[in-house]
Structure formats: C-alpha cells, structure tokens
Image 1 (spheres, rainbow, N blue to C red):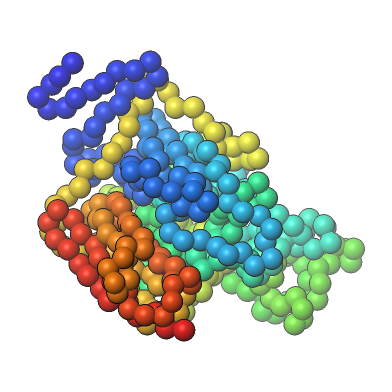
Image 2 (cartoon, rainbow, N blue to C red; image 1 turned 90 degrees about the vertical axis):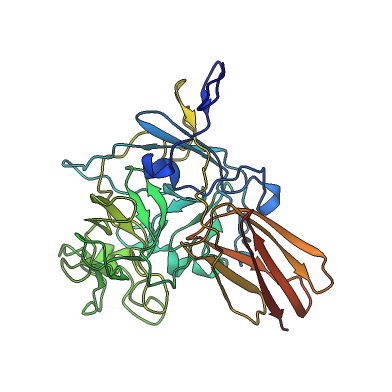
Length: 416
C-alpha cells in the first residue's frame, strides 16, 4: 500500500515505519541512540553501537551487542574478551518515581549507554574477605584493566563501563549541556558530566557534583556510613597505603547539599531534550576529568525498575507485535565543527563533533600517500570518537569528514 506521505510495510511480527516527523516530536528515549544502519562492526567483527530501535506506546527496545563503534582494548590483566551479547533492552517511555522501597542497582547491567554498551555500577561484585560489608570499588580494584575508554569485558564477554564513558562524548566540553549518553533501567535518562547551573532554567552550564563524600575521619573501618557499629569480625581493613580511603563503597557517605545531585546521583531539572523538566542522572567527574564516586547511579534507582533487563539472563526482551522501527531523519545544518586532541598523537586521538554540526557524517582516515586506513559512517554531533594510531608509523595523516552539504579536513601528526 502506497501513501503520498509515508510507506508502511506489514509483516507477521512488526510494523516497519520510516519516521518522517521531526525527531524532536518523538520521546528522547527513542531518538537518543547511536544508530548503526550500515552494518558496521567493532571489536572482533561484532556489530557495533545500536543496530535496531523499536518502539510502541509503552516501551522502546534497544538491540545491541554491547560493543561500541570506537576502538577498545587492550585490558591489562583481564583474560576476558568482548563477545556479542545479543541484547534487546526494554526501556519504558513513561518512567515513574518509586515512592516505595527503592531498588538497588545490582551486579551486571544497570542501564545502557546510547551506543548500546552496558552500564555497570560502582561495585566489582566482591567484598573484603567476603564479609558482605565492605564492597570493593571497581574503579580502584579493576581500574588497571580499563582501556583508554574506561571500559573492560566481564566474564561472559559483556564489555561495559563502571564509570564515565569518556570516548562516548566530549567530557571536557563544559560550555554545553552534556548530551543524553544513556538510560537507566528505570527509564530515566543519564547525561554526561555537565548540566544547567539552575535546575529550573536553561542557561549557564557547570559540572555536576556528587554529594557523596569520603569519610575522612575514619581510621578503622569499624562503622558503616549510617553509623552502624560493626562487630570486630566484620571490620574492614584499616585505612592505609594498601587500602586507602575510596577502595570500598562504604568509605563514602551521602551528605545532602554537599553537591548538586541526590542519593541516586541525579536531580529533577530542565534539559535540552526535556525543557519541561525530568528526573535525570549525571555521570560524575572532577575538574581533571577523573571519575568521581558513585560514577553513574547512586545507591538506588530513582524510579520503578521493569523486569527483564537485569540479572545474568537479563537483557533479552521480546518486542511487541505493534512496534515501529526508528530511523534517524537528519536536520540539514551545512556545517561540521570538530575538536581533536591530542595532536601530535602517540597512541590514541579523540575527536568530538560539536552539537552545531550536521548529522550522519561520513569520513575516513588517510595516510600521507592518500591510502584509506579507516572509514567512518553515521557519525553524530555531541559525540566523541577515537582513532587508534598504535599500529601506524610516525608521520602525517589526514582525517576527512563530509556530508552532502559540506566537508572537513584535519592534519594529524603521529610521533613516536
């Protein structure tokens, strides 16, 4: 059946529809994903980013392998490698505050980044002497195995981040409100590190500060943050050079008003995508761009968590028969504005596409002879991408990006 406005093809399981309305008219939970529409692959030839976005009136379904489009690895001391997770995450389009007993983000995936990579919480799933009281901080106990993008694979091959996904967006851009870089499994958005200073008004931007503080007066780990005095059998290790403050999640205490964010590591605020206001989580970093506890979500989710995404077998939901497929409809801006750092480069360079730029940018990296070394497709504004120079010899390279309307070329120098 043909219509003048759009073409709809019926199948036994889903309705596939090209979205011809402006993406701003759709829920941001449908439109905020880094889509891979060209069959591109990442690590190990695994499909990268988000391969399909389906939605109905209640939920959006995100199909992904938990492998990004940027370069990842190596992972020092980590014997695991990324494997295709074949995830289909289900995110509610109508999140609601949980007014009852809050849900703690457990082990494994607690949300999904906008590029289809799983989000893990701050815990490494182990505690001191298996006591169950002093939970180990993954950033300190596993951080040596994180790659340049601050991610690593878990047993079973799920590549993930416990902390700020630095290669997903420009975490040094303090002049713009950060983009949505993911969704938690209660349906609320996760933004990068920067939000509006005034939560009620779009205006000046600043880095969002965690309200969790180190318990600097603690010498012996004999009390919990809520003041509970432990028996000697449940003591953690004394604060020392071997176990400094910050090694364990219970080394931190939530201090209301000490930062911008609440106990969930979020706040209710206006954002570019939600001008009327939304509860939103923010990743937390310091002024030197180092991750700050609790990194993504706090001790609990703010909203009601749906079944089907969490746990060892989670993330394999079945879309309803009435879903539509979302495909991007670019807005023609006729500009490409890029920042790149470092240059000269020794191993990895990172380029960030400014929000003012066009959508769906293509490009390639060339050596000085004009030989194409790597191709890029469907690059999006507000996102950061990496270039792995580790296997390339010293010399001059060219990064060329283009749309049907404009082009951009940058010389990059590789040094030893």
